[in-house]
Image (cartoon, rainbow, N blue to C red):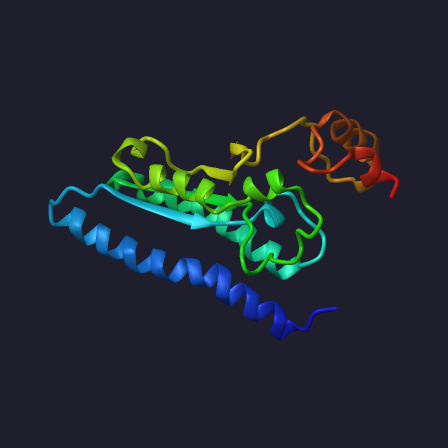
Amino acid sequence: NMSEDEWDLVVKVHLKGTFAPLHHAANHWRLESKAGRTVDARVINTTSHSALFANIGQANYAAAKGGIATLTQLAARELARIGVTVNAIAPRAETRMTAGLSQGQSEERMARRDPEWIATLVAWLASPEASSVSGRIFEAWGYGYSVIESWQHGPQMEASKDPAAIGADVLRITGFARANAGIDRNTWLNP
């Protein structure tokens, strides 16, 4: 139901809003490296659970935040050679934006959504101790930190130029593939 303007605005705020400072910082660090100065820098982007687990409801927000996750991995690869680590967090916290959505939640659950839990991970990722961690996406909240595992090659079949000849094999490999995170295969196939 969203307009193209609504799509563009959210993508501009989140995805371009992440790219722009990263672009300028990366150029600065590249120049420092070319000048022979040691670079030991950190970038910590913010993605979202909505993107990583394909939550229904806000396609523009999820797509922009998914773009940030991919940009994080790409920038980590590009900037590693000059001493920059790039990671992202997917925070799950109670904020002004989510206030009111958690009505009826237990006190313990709300305490686990305190942003301080996320700040601890961000502070560590920004530290010299994190210099070997790059290209990672972390889900963070008071229940723990988890590394989100990126796209992986799954079951494979031979290619064909005949669409009528591949159906059984496509169904076979998708049957052996792990379900996407957060998606129950039975619900997905039989809504």
